[in-house]
Image (tube, rainbow, N blue to C red; front, side, top):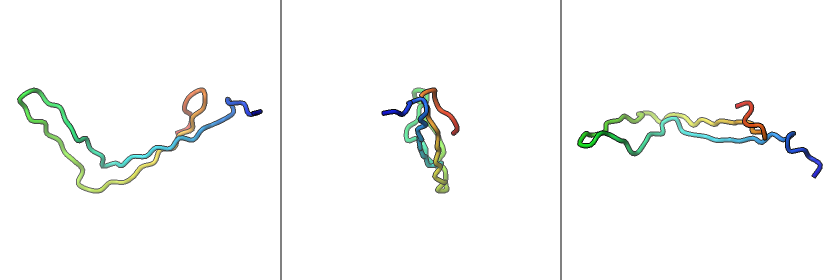
Length: 59
């Protein structure tokens, strides 16, 4: 109870796969939407970020 919230830094972790692709597309009416998808598997990337009451700090 004696901890000042302004002194705390929360660690936020998120991740994504670099070969993620959209499953839906948009195009003008009557035209086909074309797209490409990655051939290789890709890598997983993890992003760590510090969050304070004043906003995000070092990412």
